Length: 292
Image 1 (tube, rainbow, N blue to C red):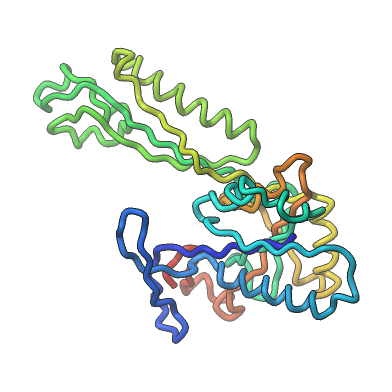
Image 2 (cartoon, rainbow, N blue to C red):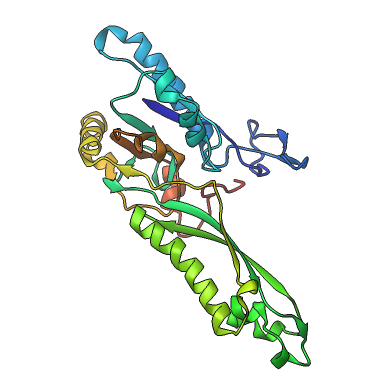
């Protein structure tokens, strides 16, 4: 199976290039926003189409079934989950291997980065509505200030003390065990601080772990070795480099988390012009999700 993502982001393109996106979209709340493929998904779709054409043209040289996936909502972490829930591997052949790529800005164009094992992380969104007992800044000893509970560094902001304080967290981890530990401890620590401050249980923080989340990408080591050997044979050792895991998330991980698991591999074709990459210490070029 080869997967491409195809969603865009609500970012205004700022390159002034003739092919720069000028499109707009309407969000669920009715807001009209500009959008662009700020994470390289236009490249990913182009690669998928190119692969499809090449493999079809050379159909007599290989055996098996090719499954091409165009996945929506990768940025939200929902697309792969929804496709699997819709019966992706029941309505279509179940693959023996899953492959995907994602452009990178960490190496110059023409170089491939690869990681064996954990390559990307779990990403969870956690909302904390931290509650207290409000009052006036003149009498702080008569309040239970949620701002103080949320961040000791902003004590100076106390003038009129509020009744609540809302935090929005992004929690990133690799293994399932670490993810479960972090999410559990966020709840325990939030409630523990409230108890320490003397708040009644009815005013305990409301900790909400959002339903949409991204699981970590684990590159099957054996499949990673096979892909790397092909890349090295085609492009040479100097253009295939081992890279460390990154703290980003990728919905591609879900396709391999089925029962039984499917060996999966995501690798990084790098996309920065070599001249610009060589000047990276003195000049700026856009990273993922950047308007440039």
